[in-house]
Image 1 (tube, rainbow, N blue to C red):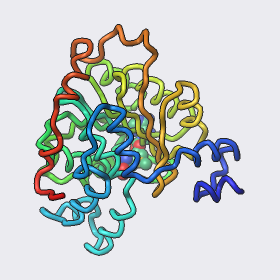
Image 2: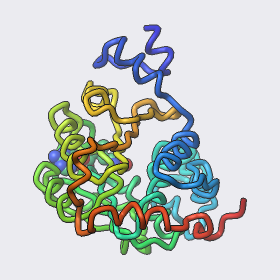
Image 3: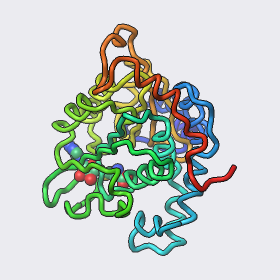
Length: 288
Ligand SMILES: C[S@@+](CC[C@H](N)C(=O)[O-])C[C@H]1O[C@@H](n2cnc3c(N)ncnc32)[C@H](O)[C@@H]1O
């Protein structure tokens, strides 16, 4: 019970020790962004903080909110977004990846997270590929939703679709090949939340992504896979203060893994590209 209070939530699936472990890594979203950007060798950039990105979307230029929350009043849509700093943190991290690299999300559903990431890529003038995977069946019952395939990705605004590559396949099939063929520097799990599937996605992405790439995951309180994963691989990790069910880890590799290359890039080039990339002045329309 004490652990649940510290974390601000209860979870029937995790032990008190596991909840304490997560509570010890709970941070404000802006602080998580700053810590990960420093770990990746960037100066901090206030324009790209999760709260700044949320405020940009709330301006509702080009009707982004109506696309993200179809059917809701503007006020209600703004309220929904304001409580989703976890997703704004995911999107702010999309600013920390190198030009040739890609972003990969499992579990597109309506495309809420996909759309926020595409919004940031667009604002930054970046053209990284954003892969998003969901199941191909025409109607499916997931753990929490009934979904028709026509609604998968339906809240991605048309003007942002050019960044998005939608894959209709089981993540267990599509994930390894996309990771092997592309230099994915940001991976987001939000598909099937069973312990086996989550552990599969974490380990495969951790293995095939380059050093210091970022792994984000929703529903980390649904089972112990995220806790086990960060412990097993000794990854630095953080839990979102606004939503303790959302976690972030950085892929710090074993030194011997550095001899291999990731994706189409020659060894080491992504780190060089990352450091030389200037993101400070590219988030158009924002003033500090
Ligand atoms: C919780 S929803 C995703 C929510 C979405 N990321 C968002 O931010 O709104 C989970 C999605 O995962 C998909 N899914 C479930 N099992 C999957 C699998 N094995 N491979 C790919 N997608 C899967 C479901 O069809 C569903 O659309």
